[in-house]
Image 1: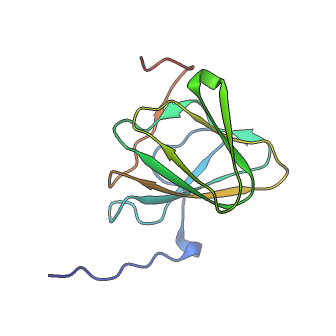
Image 2: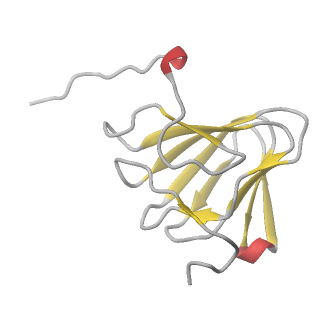
Amino acid sequence: MAQEVQVTKACSLQASGGQTEGMIRQGAITNQSDKICASAKPHTSSGVHHHGEQDTVVYALCGHGTVVSKGGKKRQDLAPGDFALIPAWAEHQEVNDSDEEVTWIITRSGRAPVVENLERWGAST
């Protein structure tokens, strides 16, 4: 039997799931599917973290942000329309060095988002 269509209105989004300082994660379809939305205020960054066994696909909706990885040595900028793949267990950090808010649409491979905050790079190995 087919499932019913589920709609989540933007005005009903609230912070949900694991949070990392500097990022606001809002569950749009949590526990119904594996999609969430994240935004970052100007001049903020998340802590170093990974998403356990979940692969993460990021679509940059608006603003210019950066994904930092490889122990803090690699910076990859995302502009509106760009995509990024963050593999399972990949330590990373989201950074917004700009004067504008950044909004990313995020899809993970699990129904409920996993966020493992780390004290420093390499703390999960």
